[in-house]
Image (cartoon, rainbow, N blue to C red; front, side, top):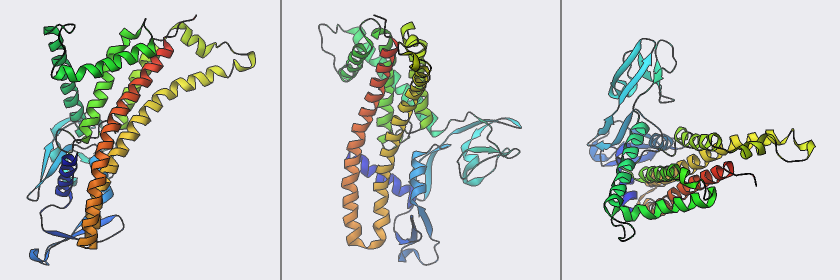
Amino acid sequence: MMLAFFISLLLLQGDTLGPAGLGMTENMPGEVSVIPSEAEGEASVSQDIDIAEIIFEHIGDEYEWHITEWKGKPVAIELPVIVKSSTGWHVFSSERLQHGEHYQGLYIDPEKGKILDEATGKRPLDLSITKNVLSLMMSTALLLVIVLLTARWYKKHDALKEAPTGLAAAMEPLVMMVHDMARENIGEEDYRKYSPYLCMAFLWILLNNFLGIIPFFPGGANLTGNIAITLVLALCTFFTVNLTGTKHYYKDIFAPDVPGFLKPIMPVIEVFSACMKPVSLTIRLFANMLAGHIMILSMVCIIFIMAKYGPLLSGGMTLVSVLFGVFLDALECLVAFIQAYVFTMLSSIYIGLARVHEE
């Protein structure tokens, strides 16, 4: 954990400070000005560091994957831009649109960070491979490899006579935990049909939660802290619940056994409740993972904010920031597991409620 925190500190320093040997002075509230040291000379131009911009740049989606800076030059992966604008399809490197440049009638809005069409001023059909999309592809491929390697071990060995080893030994308790969760919440009759979905949802969320904590490539993308991703996951549970629900489940929604004066009200409440379930799944996962990233980055930024107050106070706050940063890293690992577990558990409960049979 301490190693991961120090790496994130170094990467953030590379993103913000650039070459070594720079001092800091106060500029505006929420900003720190970086001025050259005396050895650099007075002719150098000062640079401003916006802490809020740094944090939101790290947790947001981008058309390039910025890694760090080396000798004053950015080290980044330029991702492909694929858009359909008013002039047709365009495919090119995102490097063409960096630093506010316009290319083929397209440019990146500096406020929202999205590509706009010069002719219309609106967003075109955007199918670009962004940072989050690339992270999604890599994590899904990695999970597929992990699952196939685990299945390969069980194919070659008799699990009843031989204990699993290596990757299979690490995966077995996780899979069995979800398997037992599904059996308890869905029931003996139906749980086997839903265990594969619940297992893959748990493993995918868990893997991406941990990848988001890793401060260097291929980690660092705020995938599960993106509300679009968590919304899709929640909709998968929503459609699984409502497309496979029993007749008794829908009877309880639209024709419940309640007193007559409640019959016009209860269907409205039940439909609203069914629609709010994916909303709660979406917000819970998104908000918790996003908050964790912001807190860790804020701890790192405190070091640079306090640098202007002298070596004594700066050194003390650096120690405090490092200790709290390591603690938050450990806490974020716990939260990463808990959020994957809670999402899977609630999904299994919702499915179990939809599979209820009339007694």
